[in-house]
Amino acid sequence: MKEIGGYFGCEESLGREYHDNTVRLNSGRNCLRFLLREKKIKEIAIPYYICDAVIKVCEEENCKIVFYHIDKKFQPIINEGSLNQEIYIYIVNYFGQLSNAAIIRFKMLYRNLIVDNSQAFFQRPVEGVDTLYTCRKFFGVPDGGYLFPPRNVNGLERDISYNRCIHLLGRFEVSASEFYDYYSNNEKRINDLPLLEMSLLTRNMLKSIDYKHDIKVRTQNFSYLNKALTEYNELDIKNIKGGFMYPLLIKDGEKLRNHLIANRIYIPAFWNNVLFGEAGNWEKQLARSLVCVPCDQRYTIEEMKYITDVINEWRKEGTE
Image 1 (cartoon, rainbow, N blue to C red):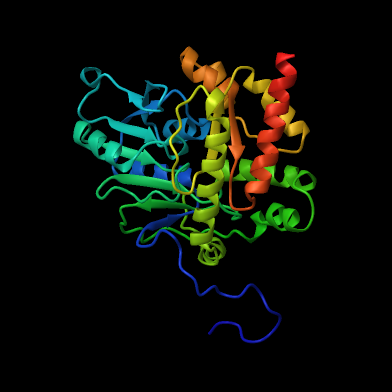
Image 2: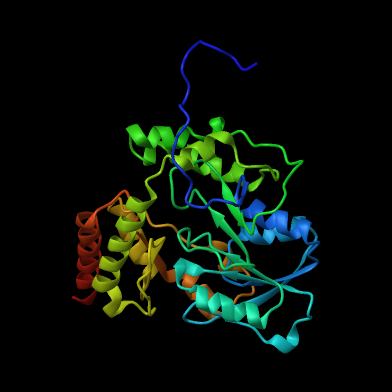
């Protein structure tokens, strides 16, 4: 018998998650860990331009890594003849720029394919293709990941997330900077999370989200930024539904990133570990100079205009 009476906790949401009929785990990287274990993957090809968490998971699971390059459209450059038939190809859908039609073509080329949609939450998976998603990159949740297609995860313990929410609660009432250390510590904790099912709290939070609203706002904001910034973006970016962030590759991007941060427009750097590895000049240029502009559901066109005004003023000052 469950407890009856006493003080109130969070009430159960009656909504639905965006991704249903799926494997719900406690992080995107543990979705990869699950696949490595389930399929007994011994060798995997991953892009040089990649989060070090992916590398860490592969190394921890004793999976041999082969690296490949990407082109200026974020498409993989893979020499088929250099790979054995058993190797798995890990493709990252950077900023949602890889269409499902392209994924289907890759599936026809490579027998063993894994798609990382951590930057394309609203893009539905291709049937029969192992696809993983990360929740906290798009929403105010402490953790969580989805894995397709669905399969049996009986025997996995369930995670508990209440102690990883302080940065979310803090930012709701005060500034992000005041709780950045809590956020940073939470990210470090997620690095070391064991493979567990998604917590009840995270799933309940995901059920409470107005996904239609979020898709609409993200799509409008992404489109506005693309129209306003495309003339000096070195990347050819296509508009997408429910964009993650707008990727702006520009000369002196590192300086622009610092200028935006100084104006309280917080820009992440993806991924510094690439600068110190054996990646090519293109991947290192992305790691050094790519400016990832926020366009999520917290903001309106008014904030997008402010961001582009700050960028244009910076460019004007640099040309004078």
